[in-house]
Length: 349
Image 1 (tube, rainbow, N blue to C red):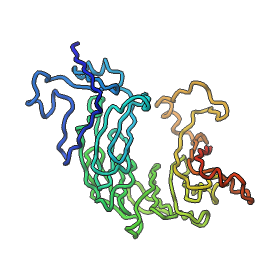
Image 2 (cartoon, rainbow, N blue to C red):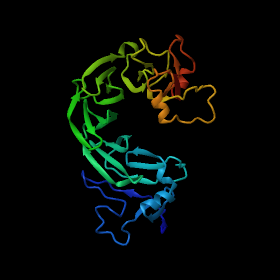
Image 3 (tube, rainbow, N blue to C red):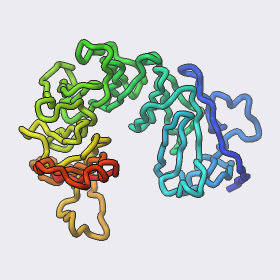
Image 4 (tube, helix red, strand yellow):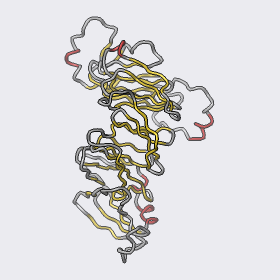
């Protein structure tokens, strides 16, 4: 096996293809530019997160580079995307890739491909080639305009639902072609889709500055129901997350609510609910005494238990400003001090 390794102290920046269908290949052999490359035909190049370059065949690179199979973390900023290996310490190690973009990045989503929504209405799609992310092999989808960028992306039934203003556009993730069908959420085009979560045959959506959560059918796009959280909290909806079998919503008033519960939760945040996420707990997991070594259940075990009714083995994590027990009528002396402190609240569902 013959390899060549060089070092580079400079951060690598990759320009983005300016039009759809004009990718540049990082791998040398077998690409569209094979006629312009010579002695290196049949070889590829890999840059590690430590700044070194290795040239070899793809098979050799996969066998000698342990980073090839590691997961990565993509950070979207106003000046581009920074990619780190998940095992790296970002405080003392440079990013392994950086892709610059001309507009602020609004959201990043990963589903075998990386979909990057930009503030100018474009969605950049990155794909994995031979276990490596190729920063120069990107495709650009123009779905909106600077006045109406894609503000939310969620996978639904093998498709990607994209919220642009009060419209929902549907993208085929295999062909990267926009479906002919799109639909509007409400009649006010000044309110954009900011919250969207899917489960089963339903998709829950909420618009900016709205206290209403709308449920749509994933296949027929029919509006099924609408939940108004205003009577409970008198604030606009901030975030949504899914925790089987309920959909939880966080509001600007700091309370959390589920359509399956008649009232908001008695516990919440003093200020805004900044985010909600849910995780599935292993069977027998004790939050007070978690086992030292937890292993993910294999897919066969999941399939075998698919017919069993779901148990209360989900955890909802809320992040927000401060903590407050809404059952207390007297204001606490610490409210003014703690409402500016970030808190994580754990909810068993």
